[in-house]
Length: 176
Image (tube, rainbow, N blue to C red; front, side, top):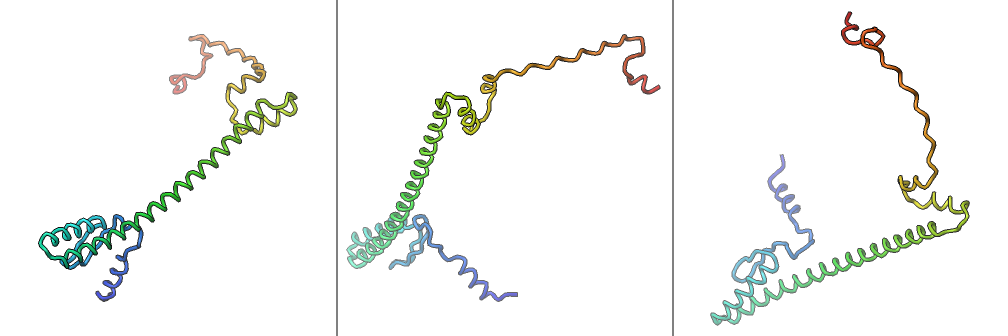
């Protein structure tokens, strides 16, 4: 069995912040009046309120201290917001480039289809273009071709009369 010391060490290692998005991360701030816990915006609001309260009570030193704490978290939040905005802009630029590539490919396909439809008048040159245009054959396209002649149907066998016994075995006859 492991000792509690090693378990607590592993527990602390797993709870380390990964550094990701700090805009919504919860912080514990050890300020002059004790801990303040919350997201950076909540901590900023709390320190600004403490700053106003200290100013109203005439404690200039505490007011300045709370103002500095609020400024620290304001800078952290601004930096995190710049990073988020930069990542968003990079993502939007990548999306614009992908869309531009799709638009170019679509224009090339349309141009190739128009060339195939308005292409050379000779039948020999048009046949390979039609086969290679990448379109699926539809019933409308088949209608343009000459219809195949239908095979004649075989005549039906005549029905057997009810009482002559030449009909197929019925369940009652099969049981006998």
